[in-house]
Image (cartoon, rainbow, N blue to C red; front, side, top):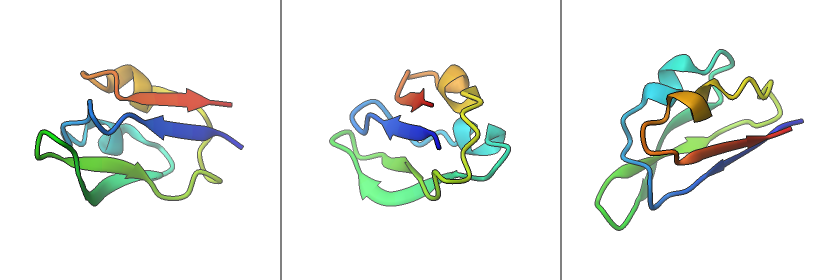
Amino acid sequence: MAKVEITAAYCKGCLLCEALCPKGVLSLGNEVNALGYNIIKADDTKECIACQQCAVICPEGAIEVYK
């Protein structure tokens, strides 16, 4: 099982990670960070295959994936 960590302070809610996730684990949440952006959340990390595509595509470096 993989662990997806999102640094809320860096996330700008661009949704690039959501578009690339092959398992649909990521989605835009209701939580807002200090900059006023809705941040991404990991819904069901049991489905995550730790491909790390989300971490690679994130322009802000807000996502870390651990296997």
